[in-house]
Image (cartoon, rainbow, N blue to C red; front, side, top):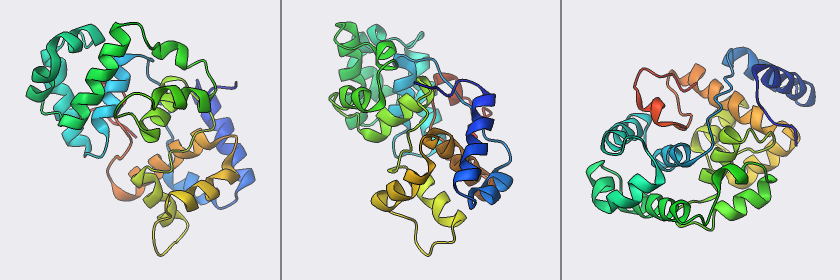
Length: 226
């Protein structure tokens, strides 16, 4: 499987996308910088993504700063030992506490291998991840996009991507998940680059990042997410 590992891969993908869909030429021009943002696979990266679910960047960063202060280093064993009390002290909601604890316990017991998952095709890897409580398709897709470099994933549930595509294409309303899936099919096999492009477009047009937080290091408010 071809992976998105370098900025050269991003450049190649953008060129292919512009050729496949001429509408993207203007999107690329406005977005300017499309970042790679690869993260190391593992527990800390997936926890960062879980914490980012359906909250603002500032809220996610605040929770991750508190959590990494309580568990340093942020490992599955440390979180499993700290339990819900530690996650509650970090300000993490109960559903996310359950998801993070289930993940920590699965890893601590050797029931799942997040590094090995990155070697699987996307459908199989998403299937294994979404068996875990609190990990849905969006979380699994974001992990595979950025920790595994999967080239052909477009998270249609992402509201920022829905809004960005709607604005870029002059739609009266943002596309729903089904419509966005149909639109994004034209961008295969480079949908992973297309997702990065539209997060960058959102940042360029709205003046703020909506890209998911991928690592505890990004809990620093000065860290640009692109």
